[in-house]
Image (tube, rainbow, N blue to C red; front, side, top):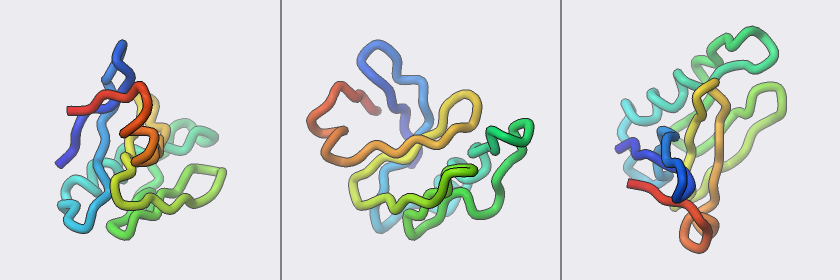
Length: 95
């Protein structure tokens, strides 16, 4: 299930929580909204995010999301990875 994510002041990011049972539609939502920041916002589809937690950061590399981490994108299609520890102990809010 996708959720909103942000700080206490602003929680306008769409996100998914990494777990063993992410719905294909939720993975697709994140994947199709990640855009290439160097080529006029061209979608990075398929391959921007996977069921296995691999997150392709355009023109930077690949990150491995772990159980409990949140993967989100911002209003211009930039991927965001927040660790489970940061979510639990930081200033993040989520619904």
